[in-house]
Image (tube, rainbow, N blue to C red; front, side):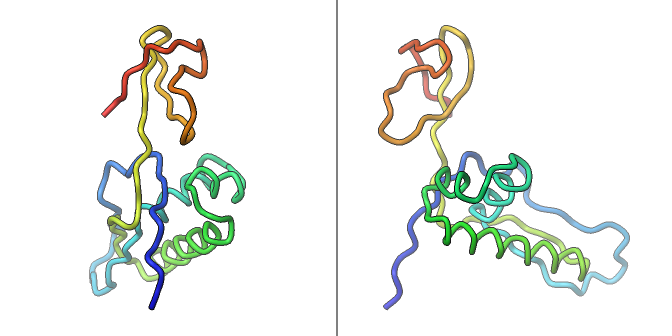
Amino acid sequence: MARTKKNRLIQMAPDFGGFIPQGIQNRNGKEVHINFEEYEALNLCDYELLTQAEAAKMMNVSRPTFTRIYESVRRKIAKAFIEGSPIRFEGGNVEIASWYKCEHCKITFTLVENSPKVCPLCKNYIITENK
């Protein structure tokens, strides 16, 4: 019996549904589906320029698990580019991080699990959760 997958922590889901290649007359290519955790892995390593160890910690997974997720999304993107296939984002085993706003200095931030709810910049305790 297979183990149930642990939820991966992501900072934010994409606010768009995917990509469609331009200039393709015959759209016989099947859609490539990218899970939110794969999107987050690509974001953390290739956009935010974190190491895989740092990104794994942010997603609350082991580094080898993160590497598997990251390699999967890169293969899927390569396939979509080479075959001219549309890319669609879809769910997955994810939990979206809670974001907070400091009432004093007005910054928006997220907190590490089990840390005190205090602004990391001005140390103010008057914060509100953004939804």
